[in-house]
Image (cartoon, rainbow, N blue to C red; front, side, top):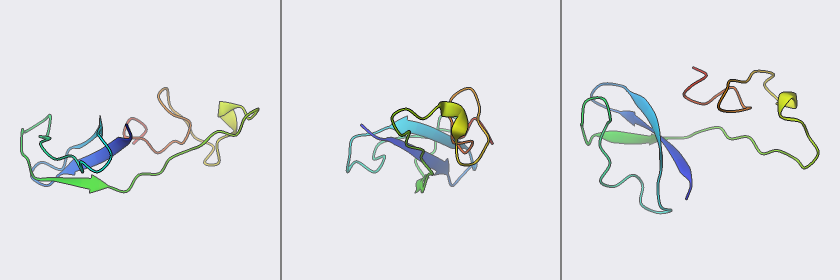
Amino acid sequence: MPLYEFRCDKCDHVFERLCRIGSNGKGLTCPKCRSRKLRRLMSVFSARVPGESPSSSPSGASCSTCTSGSCSTCR
């Protein structure tokens, strides 16, 4: 299952959820305000080449949960 990023249109909260392919987040609610008015965001992802170390990410930034420097935790 892919990990999708959503933004709540009501409170502007951004969060991630694992969703079935093709579900588009149907039935999800915002964990902060419980609104169903969500927008799926286009997210940046990082793929690691075998033998490449996680510290050699293209952006040069990282956090404790990713190597791309662009996940919701890094912001």
